Amino acid sequence: MCEVLEITIGNYYKYRSKTDQDYQDYLVIKQVFDDSKKTYGYRRITVEIRDKTGKIMNHKRVLRITKKYDIQANYIRANNPKKNASYLKENVKTDLIRRDFNQRGWVTDVTYLIWGNRRAYLSSILDLELRTVVAYKISFRNDNKLVMDTLNEAISKTKDLNGLVLHSDQGSQYVSTEYRIICESNGILISMSRRGTPLDNAVIESYHSLLKKETLYNNDIKSLEEYIQLVHEWINFYNTTRRKLKK
Image (cartoon, rainbow, N blue to C red; front, side, top):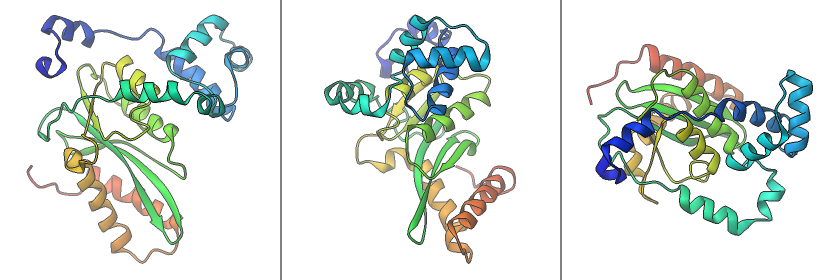
């Protein structure tokens, strides 16, 4: 692992034990920002936190954290294309899994749930060792919030995250600054497939394919809502009952 990351063993263990002092405040700030339909700047966020939670947070701290986690309205982001492009490039990470799927780590991806002319999006995080779903979310929007909500749920359920590898493709949500900071804040090592190489993330691709075969193609579904309910039920079945063959 240290050879892949090109760091010393000492620095690796120093990184593993590092915690981010801003992470909990980030969660509060992000919730207020999302509740404002992603329109509030740091001044309004500061006031909203004080009025809604009673928590006193200095506006300079709020500003620093919003910059650190790249929390800003989409119309502002759209006016800074060069800045965003540099973020994307620096957030692309090396493939640490290298198609060795029998190791400690998580894999993640977003897939479509399509019925008729309607669609929803399923974001999943799968544990490689246990072959169980750590967390998943379904949304009618394929945006950063869907992926971050899935990631935060997985983090909240797991005690020891230090040094854990989280592997994905190079989708826009996974190369976002917010995704990188959340992972780094919790000691998670980011790993990414090569572009246009789905076999680099074969486990989650296979899982999503299986889910669709045993829900959409195995039932007489009448609506997207019914399809989504079947997905919820199937994931519970997959985690608790479905027999898994040896890897």
